[in-house]
Length: 214
Picture (cartoon, rainbow, N blue to C red):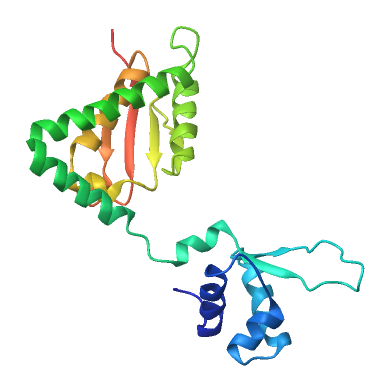
């Protein structure tokens, strides 16, 4: 678990195995003092990796505070989603061939286009800037860390600082082709060109959006 001391890693590991635990319970497991464990828990709380679970009043003194992991702690445990995606793509290609894999990507692309069309403003009553900004909001919600930059010549640049499907996209170029096609389909009367691409070695993906020439 990068960034965590050995004791904090052990505490996080222990809390992963149980719904909740008190500082004294953890201290007993590790041979530490209650105070030392509480200090580690408070540091983990500041890092938003653990949270307090306030106990219900029992009528006999104040019950001990219990601790549990937050959702953010999941990032400190092994994650094979990327490997699994690559394995599934390889299995699909082996079973159905490249054409079958392309059909599968096409289904995803069509669903993506349908969802974006429903969420974007009507091209007939909105500006390109409104539509691109809304698309950036949708993409950010999907994990792409997207934003829009306005250029002096009137062009708009949709910038994506992260790609949550980069591992899968590296194994199947159809994902990137499909997303570019979706942007062109849903943004209305504009042209869209990808000018930076993470998979080409750039540090981000960027799409230049311009008003279509008559």
